[in-house]
Length: 263
Image 1 (cartoon, one colour):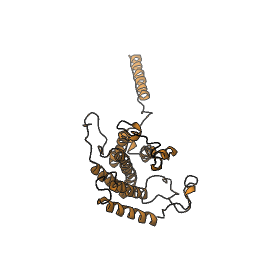
Image 2 (image 1 turned 120 degrees about the vertical axis):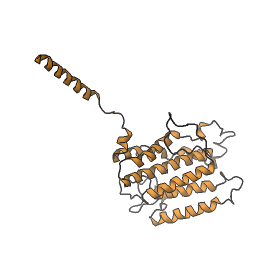
Image 3 (image 1 turned 135 degrees about the horizontal axis):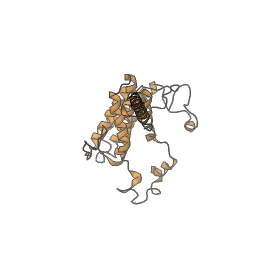
Image 4 (image 1 turned 90 degrees about the horizontal axis):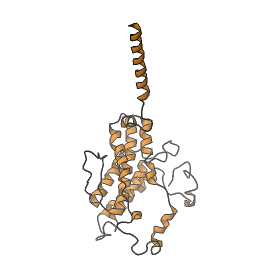
C-alpha cells in the first residue's frame, strides 16, 4: 500500500510539473492588460505606429504643379487608380486601440496623457490624408469588433471630417507637452508645437478651393484659417521655433542649429 501511494504521489508530481512547463506565456505577443499597464510596452505600441509618417521621396516632384502635362497625362487619375487613394483603416484601428485602451490602463496620468495626445494627433493626420483624396470618409473613433459591431459604417460629410480632425488636434494639443527639447530622449515625438502647426495647415485646406469650388476665395473658413495660422506662428516663434537660416543644411545636419531648436 505504501509503495502504491508513493507511486501515485510521484505520478501526480510529474503531471503538475508538466502542466507548469506547458502553460507558458505567449512568447510572440502581449495581452492588452500587459501593454496598457506597462509604460515601456505602451510606449512601444505607439512608437510602432510612427512609420505612418514615412519620409521624403524625391519621386514626389513628378506630382508637383510644374510637372503637369508630363506626369499627369490625360485620364491619369481614375476612380480605380491605386496610386491616388488613401484608405488606411488598418492603421486607424491601431490608433483607436491606443486612444481607447490607454485611458483605462494602470499607467501614471502624465504617461497616459502623452500617449493619448500622440494617438489623437495620429488619428487626425491619417484622416486628413484620406479626406484630401476622397472628401468625406467614415470617421471611426473606436476599435471595431468584427463579431458585434456593424462594419457597414456610413461616410461622414467632408465638413464633419474636418470638424472631427480639428477636435482631435485640439484634444491632442491639450495633452501634449508644448515643446520637446532636443536634449530629451523623447525628441522626435509629436509635441504640442507640431500639432498646432499641423492644425494651421488643415484649416488652410478646409478653406481652399479644393473643398469650396463654388466660393473659393470668399468663404468664411479663410478667417478661421488665418486665426489658426497666426496663433501657430506666434506660439512657435515664442518657443524658439523658426525656419532654419540655411535651408540647404536641413537634410545634412541633425537638430540644427544648436542650442535652439529651429524648423
